Every structure is written in C-alpha cells, then in structure tokens.
Amino acid sequence: MHHFSVWAPRASSCAVQVDGVTYAMSPASRGWWQADVDAADYGSTYQFLLDSDPHPYPDPRSAWQPDSVHGPSRLLNQSSFTWSDDKWSAPPLSEAIIYELHIGTFTPEGTFTAAIEHLKYLKNLGITHVELMPVNSFPGRWGWGYDGVSLFAPQEKYGGPEALKQLVDACHAAGLAVLLDVVYNHFGPVGNYTGKYGPYITEQHHTPWGGAINFEESGSDEVRRFFCDNALMWFRDYHFDGLRLDAIHAFVDRSAKHFLEQLSEEVEELSNQLGRKLLLIAESDLNDPQVVSPRNSSTTGEPSGSGGRGMDAQWSDDFHHSIFAFLSGERRSYYRDFGSITQIAKSLKSVFVFDGTYSEYRGRAHGGVIENLSGHRFLGYIQNHDQIGNRAFGDRIVEVVGINKAKLAAALIMTSPFVPMIFQGEEFASSSPFLYFADHEDPELSRAVSEGRRREHAADGAWDSVPDPESQESFEVSKLKWSELDQAHHKEMLDWYRSLIHLRTSTASLRDGNLLDCKVSFDESTEWLTMERGQIQAIFNFGTSPLSQPVRKGSQILLTSDPEAHYEHKTVFIPPLAVAILSGPADPIDTRMPGEQS
Image (cartoon, rainbow, N blue to C red):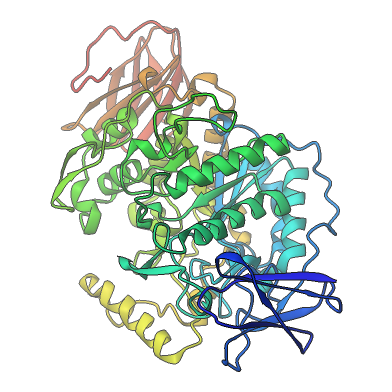
C-alpha cells in the first residue's frame, strides 16, 4: 500500500493513475487530495488526473522521473540505499576550497558515476567542497540545469537518484563535502505542470523568467512548504552538506517572515537533528548585508542575530567584477562600474564596492555597508558558470587576459579573506569553453533561444558566429579535456593552483576571515597592490614595468608566479605581471605607501 497526496487547489476533482489503473482521490484541507492504493509499491509508476482533462500529469513532488519530465512519476524508496558516511563531518567554510562543476561536461560520459573517477584528483588538488550545478530533472538531452521542472527528481540522464547518492557517498569517503545548486526563483519553460495544480507562480511580480514564485499571496503557505521540503530532502535523503540558492534577488516576499528566514530556520532545525552543520549559500546581487546576517533567533529559542536572512554565505560578485574588469579592460554591461585597482582594494577590505554608492550601470545608489561580518560569509572567484557561460563564446580567463594575468587573479582569490571557489578546468587553464547550451523540445522556443542569444551579443560584432546554444556541438565542445593536464601551460597553471591552494590551507593567517586584519596598499598609477594577512604579504605587480617594493626585514618569498622575482635587503623585486607572496616577522612596513588602507 502507498499513500498518495497532492496539492491541487485548482482542481474540483482529482484521481491518481497507478500502473495504468485509475483511483479516485478524496479532498482534504487547504486544497490537498489524497488516496491509499493497496496495489501501489516502490517502483510503481503513477500520474495525476485533474478534473475532466484526459491528460495525466507527473507529480510536482516526484522523486523519480525515469523517462522524462513529461512521463509518469515512479515511487522511490529513499531508505533503500546503504550509506557509508555515518561518521562524516564536513570541514567548515573557514577552511574551504570550493570546486564548482557541471555533471554533463565534467567528464566525457557526463554522469554521476563517471564523476566519481575524478574525486581523487580533486582531493589531491586540495579541494574540500564540490559544488554541483543543478541536477534536478529538466527537459531535453543537455542543459545547465537551471530550467528544472521536477525539482525533487535527480536528472535521469546523469544517472538518477541511486547514482547521485553513490556520488555523494563517494565524495564523503574521499573527504569531500558536497554542495548542490538549487533554483527556487523560477521553473523552466517546458515541462512545468505546477500551474495545472495550484498558484505556484504569481503574475503580480515579474522576473527575467516571467512571473515570480508565489511566496506571499494566496496559497503561498503550500508553495513555501514545497521549496522548504525540497531543500530538506537534499540534506536528509541525499546527504548533501549545503545548498547554493540561485539568484535570490528574484525572490519577492514581503511576508513578516521572509522565505529565506523560514528556510534557514528549518535547515538549522534539521542540522540539530542530524548532528552535522548544513550550509545555505546565496547568490545575490543586492549587496545587502542582511542576506548573510544571522536571524533574530535560533531554533533553540535564544537570541542570536540582527534580523538578517540567516544565510551562511553568499557569492561576492563585486570582488569578481573588480578583478575581471581591471585585468581585461572590458567595460560592457555591469563592468561599466568597475575597472580600477582602487575597487579591488575596496572589495578586499569592505566586500561590496557598491555599499550605498552610486552605480552608473544601475543609475542609482546601490548596496549597504558590511559591518562585523567575517570574510568567510563571502565566496571569492574569478570564474564561475555565469561569468564564463554568459559570454558570447564562453571564453575563460586565460583566453581573455593571458596566462600571466590569470595567475595574478588566482593569487588574489587564494590570498583573499574570502572563501575561494574555482570553476571546473580553471585550475589547468582548460581550453574548453563553457558555453550556454540547452535542448528545448519546442521548436519555436528553441528558435527563440537561439535568436535571443545572437541578439544579446550583437554588440560584439559576432551575430553569425555566436555558437548556437541549441546545438549539440555547443554542449560537446564544453566538456573538459582531461588529456590536457600534462600539456605545456596547462600543467604550468595546474602547478600554480596546487601551490596556491597548499599555501592557503597550510597558513593560518590566509584562512583568517577577519576583514579588519586585511591591510591593503596600492598605487593606481604604477599598478601595484600589496595585501597583508598576518605575517603574509602578497605583492602584485599589475604593471608593465619591474617593481621594487620595501618589505619587512627578514622576509622570504614563499611563492611567486615568476622565477625572476627575488628579495634583497628589505626589498622585493618583481617582474611585470607577476606576484610574490612572502612571509616575515609581523612588524609593520617602515615606509608608508600611496593609497594606504588599514
């Protein structure tokens, strides 16, 4: 026997079709329908029939979609998998090195099982946390995963529920924590049947993807329950260590308790039950400190915060934009607001470059001031799926700025007070682009996406040459080429990343998230920047001329991107476009430098 239930307040009658046999469902409170079916068991397929519509629809909460997002759901026994991670404990964010990957392009096979073969490589690289781009079920043969429609069901083409559990279990066995990217701001345009059931979407507010998720209007209690239950499922049934919440700035919620606060509260409660720390990491372009500020109270009932949303951390776009715009010289779109060493320095000290200051790109003041928050509340990166994939040709940092500047960017990330994150292949200067790709089944939608991509990048003068996001080639060319690891500059970059990661993980002051202890000096005209973190100094020469810089007496170079860099008599000499990372006594530098910030 199995108990079926579905929230369908828009239906006046409802039935469940189990293994081809139809059973009437009885109404319950608040728009729920239910039925007990003796003939149903794990492995049975089922769909719902609504009113007089002869077409059956999959369960919005389906845990398994073995055929497609349009086909019948299948009952899954979440308890049947044998886990081996009962003693697992994830390292804290303060010690994290995060590696973002896309299952479909991380390996030639593009499956959960194939990814397991590369876990030893990630561990040896120094990675502590693996972050998976969305793995919820989406239509088509390939995609980024952000057009998911069956949010509770792992993508079958990646291997489905059982294989995903095997991957997470294998990660934990290898000493790797696992984060999952989830999308709670919209559903994909194809295969989303939630509107047949209830008001999951509201047209009172709009997002780049259409109507907003209904977090505050009639029926929103059950919509919020849908997304909270989804998050709890990934933690409880799949043993994920954290979730990355996509684009929370697209949430519209004026409720007394914001959805993020509710989610944070429930995740904290589950964390207490499971006895392990569970993370929530937001993507937000609001520059709002409240996102990562603690809530007013914890689940223990004790006051603990300042009325924040309770997220453990968020992505730090201002840090990325500052570095990228300066190194590349690009000033299009949001890069209009960036491009100076001054801004890199401010982001290192204050996180948000725009903290109530005027943004030319937005045409208004933007953001708030960070106070009394650790740098570990923010992720630092020079590449991620968006910052590469939203470019016309999916080109990576090495192709844009060259290997020397790419090394400088990597050193900034790894010596910053933030939690470092790298994107798959970044560490070996992968030649594979990471294009935007999708496989929309509707021909009209497919054509619109292809043309929209060309229009978006028409200013690049590449209308005819922009890769078609709907082509299989765009997907295939984005796969990593693991044969590059031992080739020329790929090995050179890999060695650089390994050295940087080892230095960070073995140096206490580089793992310190106290922003007040991060001292930054710079000179815009001669293009250098020095960052002090305890006994560590990182000196960056972004200029085209050699740099000689006074440093602490007794300093020694721990790591440099150019072997010509050297130390003599309290002075370090650094070639153009190079960095030297030094250690020495903790006494202050005896020469005040232009642009000093402390």
